[in-house]
Length: 323
Image (cartoon, rainbow, N blue to C red):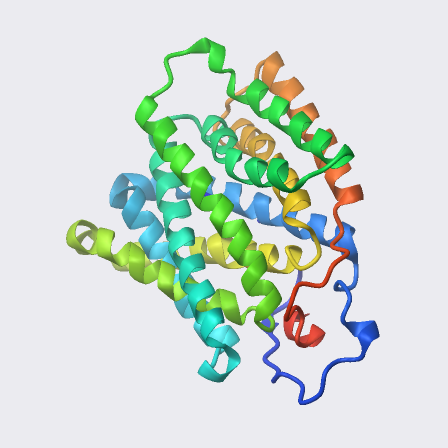
């Protein structure tokens, strides 16, 4: 999704250990569901703030050009900060990173196209159907109730009974929802298999290259140096920081819990619309916010990862963020 510390930040770059880690270190990363939930919420805040401040750029570069500029900067920043090497990846890791990159490009471009046609809160609610689908598919028993409650909140936020919604915008948002589901699944897969943020540092250039094919013919000629600098700032806010947080969050949460937590995204979008755009939510939207907050709390309490995916956390220190 088209979009969340103090001191200078660098990313640890450590080699895989020669010997397997002790069994006590092979469980879920420290902090479990609570830290994973905080990372997910911070990621969503960054995404929505990034979308809010991207609005002026849309008039000058369009949705595809805006996403392209951010992805190019994000790819360069992650390559420099993380410094992935070919030896860090097995062949299956490279394939997974490539799929993740394509899903990332589709997610960001399609969502940005959606918000040019329909309100931010509506687009976010429709896009949430992707992670909600994952939550419903993987949940069982009580956890499925949190996903259903989140879905009810999304309906209230969207208010489909009003009608008059741009169907093309809805189509873009639904396509973004599909990309978001793929993005979540492969973010967790890559995060489990590849040390630290190196998988993200490889998938982001793929996303930038894919987007270039669509943006280069029409948008590159409109880029100016001021826009380049604005794109750098926006890339840090979204996608570099939020996607890094999501990588780390998905090491601590199941896809069910993460998908249900993403139900907070429409509520955050409504809040950003209220503060930045002056859009006041109605009673239905207010109840929708309450529903998704309750669902998010329930998912946090039930969502710590209890299983170790094959190849997960080759080295716990690899996903550290050093201040």
